Length: 285
Ligand SMILES: *[C@@H]1O[C@H](CO)[C@@H](O)[C@H](O)[C@H]1NC(C)=O
Ligand SMILES: *[C@@H]1O[C@H](CO)[C@@H](O)[C@H](O)[C@H]1NC(C)=O
Ligand SMILES: *[C@@H]1O[C@H](CO)[C@@H](O)[C@H](O)[C@H]1NC(C)=O
Ligand SMILES: *[C@@H]1O[C@H](CO)[C@@H](O)[C@H](O)[C@H]1NC(C)=O
Image (cartoon, rainbow, N blue to C red; front, top):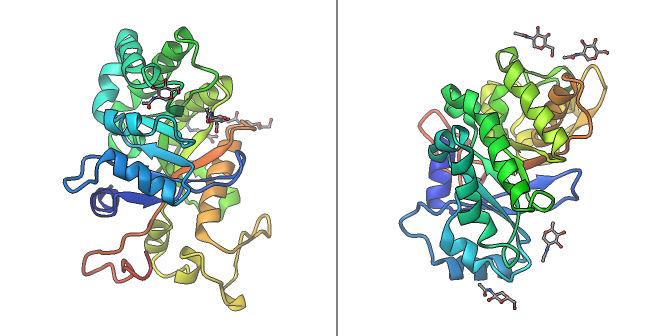
């Protein structure tokens, strides 16, 4: 996703990680492949100064993991898309990854989850067949290290895999992903994990081609004539973000799975865009 690239490379703290079921919190995403990145120690000082309690690393940067030790910050570490293929084909590669990037830092660094890949189904759909195996191997390696109760395994997915996200009550995953999604939900359920959702209202807004008011996409109060209502549930949505999260819940429900919480692992709004993106402004972001 292009947006994410420049968001992470310019504002290295990509805001917003929300949670419904696990108690609401806001955390930050940190990408470390940035040239003018402050040192890990400085980043952690900034996080502490802002009382940030949750952090997601896109990778398993050793400096960051070290600097986060003995803080009260919860950390999600990431298997990158580049690492996915190797891990999805080799339980021993998964075990080595866990030893190097997770077991070595626990318990000082409070690693609570592993995100396996990033938006794999939309970014590298050809790698879909190795996604669930990779998650399984990572989980088994955690079991072997007796870390499976404190470290969850999941994979952040984009709202792009949801067909017609509005109205939320009618949302479903694209049926071409049925078998992958089914296996994913089964994995999340069996391991007591959660669904990681990347939800960018900016894209929902721009794809809507003018049918949604911008206030709705930006968490701003809506004039009453512009209320957004799901015609099936009569539920009023004050923000597109909430509707996107609900669309994911309903899509999961269509598979007859219940009790799988959703954690939003990414959100944001671009502050700069192309000539055809007038709403990508600093003020809106
Ligand atoms: C974290 O604290 C523990 C216990 O006090 C200590 O043994 C460890 O060296 C500390 N780790 C880091 C990276 O500071
Ligand atoms: C680590 O995070 C979990 C989940 O938020 C929390 O329950 C636990 O108390 C944390 N552990 C430490 C040592 O901060
Ligand atoms: C996918 O699952 C839905 C129900 O969840 C079903 O209606 C649809 O036919 C399935 N599609 C395929 C390709 O299996
Ligand atoms: C979900 O359950 C309903 C009612 O039991 C059933 O009609 C439907 O086929 C099930 N869907 C899937 C995808 O299993």
